[in-house]
Length: 278
Image 1 (cartoon, rainbow, N blue to C red):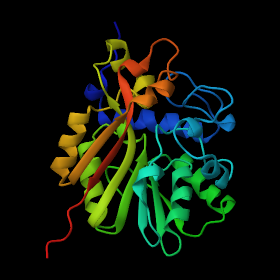
Image 2: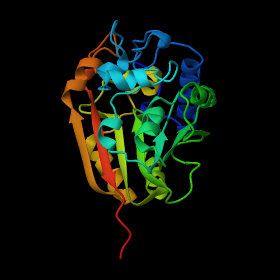
Image 3: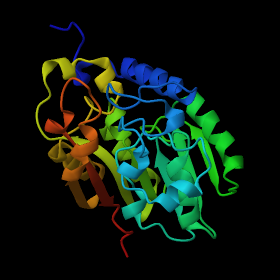
Image 4: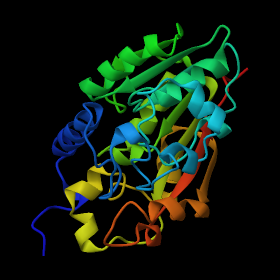
């Protein structure tokens, strides 16, 4: 039996340190992204562990979208495609929580042009540096990256139209502040469009206490009902969380020793900040 604490019993700062170290190593060119199975990030497909198809193709991104972003931004770290349902429009301001090397930000930049802008926030210095290097590679002038925690966003109140994120909220040791701060930075009527994993069944003890599962988009996943309660507590309305059963196909590849699809599924998470009262 492991002496490690479960995800919800671990000191939050310890969790943040572990996550920061893992994704710092990935930004520097390491391996082992989601779950226990990883391939070289330079080859793509880190999360799915497959050969041939990139991770982003399996996650629902169009081939044209993948090709439109310069090499180095797509690390295959997500579990969905927020662009597909965020309905971003020209002139909007988009905030990406846990922006990594910037893949979703660069896709969003094209959606909100002309006149819009994109802000990526990540707590890993190596990821922020890599993303900033990728700005020039992608020839965009409406994207910026800021170092910060997604529960304490370096973003002003009521300045964002849409908050997106891709398989990052599950990594936060304290999730209620994440939704509270997303609500704060959104304009009245602004919206959340997040792809993340949700827990569908209790994890075995060895998954609950495994640090690699915690930092690999597994053990920190919340249930749909818990996410709904947190969004409601933050003040959001029109909350819709839709599990994607087909995601078990790539989630099952995240661990060589067990089928994580028995406990975990990707979902789209949508909610809206109420409009300002007349």
